Structure formats: structure tokens, C-alpha cells
View 1 (cartoon, rainbow, N blue to C red):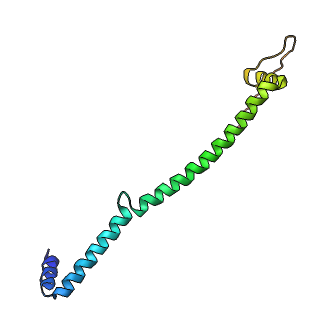
View 2 (tube, rainbow, N blue to C red; view 1 turned 180 degrees about the vertical axis):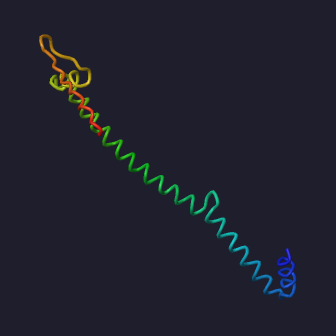
View 3 (cartoon, helix red, strand yellow; view 1 turned 30 degrees about the vertical axis):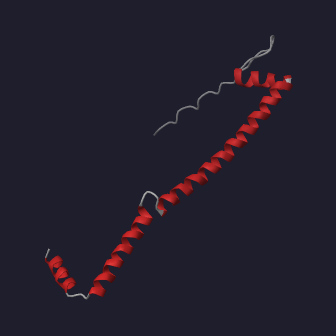
Length: 114
């Protein structure tokens, strides 16, 4: 608190021009801080720019995925072999008379500890 009183005492000795300059500098610093950290400040704009870049990348990836899905749909509409492969892969269906073999691996023997 004593430093505050000393500062106050020294400010009282300043000329009007020095007080105006100090007030102007304080206002400039406050405006710069507000421009950087406020809701519409530079930091927020930077965050939104990064988010926009991420959304553009995600949009591109989804567009590519949609293109692949459209091609798969067109193939399923026109190619009976594609329908058969989808039924076999996704639904585990087999033709009548086919035999399905499932390979089951034996677990490795437990390691012996000395």
C-alpha cells in the first residue's frame, strides 16, 4: 500500500501533458488487450480460422466418402456379382450346397516361468 501512496504522490507532481500521455498509454494498452482477448478479438478469430480449416478438411473427406458410396450404390443397382459379394461379405450368406470352413487358430501355449 505504501508504494501506491508513493505513486499517487509522484503522479500529483506530473504536468498536465504527462498525465494526458499516461492516460493515453493506459487507454491504448486497454484497447490492445480488448482487441486481442475479447469475444471478437484476434485470438477468437484465430481459433475460428483453425476450426474452419478443420471443417474444410472434414468436408473434403466426407465428399470423398460420399463419392465411394455412390459408386457402390450404382454397382449394386447394375452388377449382380457386386450384390453377391456384398451378401457374402456383410451378411455371411452362402449359396445352397456350399460348405463353409472356419479356421480356428489354437492359442499359443503359455510360457514357462523358471
